[in-house]
Image 1 (spheres, rainbow, N blue to C red):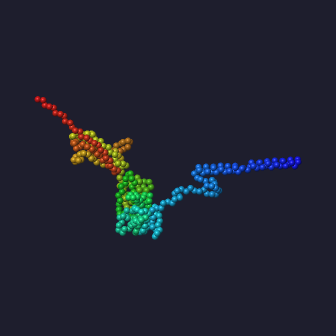
Image 2 (cartoon, one colour):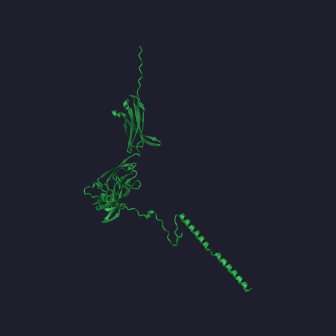
Image 3 (cartoon, rainbow, N blue to C red):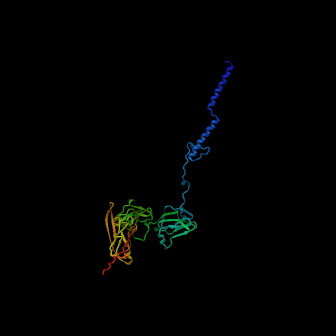
Length: 403
């Protein structure tokens, strides 16, 4: 093969290699188009997530990079400060916790923020006027409560709130309330002192009963006892429960709970008993009475006899008292009233039927009018009425005499 043929073959080979390289290398136009499509997909994904992807950021975290935590609004914003603080030293104040334990004879200095502040504290401090141990001072932006020479009797809840006034109207600022329960400990007084040796408490069947044997030290061990016969009263947390700030609560009073009970506190080998509580069981009704009234006749003539009956159906062993109002009372006309109580069965249940019957003998014109019956039990009263009319007697015409 001559040199001319070799040159032509070499050129063909070079053209073939160049064409294959162009197939593997994308063009600049193709690169730009692919880049636009990728950015469009990223923006679409960002809009769907409700966030804009900043330039230069990646959708994926780098290896080892921590995922950012979601911060709730409550975490971003600090909790509001309590309006109630306590002075612990000159110029030093602390937020008052829900429960505070101090020693008796220690001074209490509370500050409450607000322009118009009201205080609530144990009522005993209002009655203690001998040396004016309670002092309250109001300033422009806060109020100060001081108790000097504190005693075990000062144990209780202390709270404050501010009044918000607009124009001439003032309202309680319930959202700005500060309160704390303070124990004033005294090794000689384990219970908050009271003036009563015996306290009578009524136990209602429909309401919990509280035995307020409050201690001065929350660490004291408190138990419940019966005086006669002497025995410990079981406290299971269901029928009877104990709360250190209030005392013992009988949630479902029964006749067996009645009698003389007392609390006993034990602290560091010292034992003391509380006021004795005389519990009286009272069977309270679940609702007010619902009387029904009915007259033996809706109308009467002069000289007739009639009666009006008032009836109440209710729970057994619930006393119901009746009171009447009737027209004859205006002239002091005394009627005859009879009352009775029986047990009856209605709707498959045993109920108590209480009844009062008002008898009117030899009716007069003054007996015309409204008759009202009021039934009362320990829950309240209900009144029902009925109207009774007098019928005028028509005289028969006399016959003419014939001569």
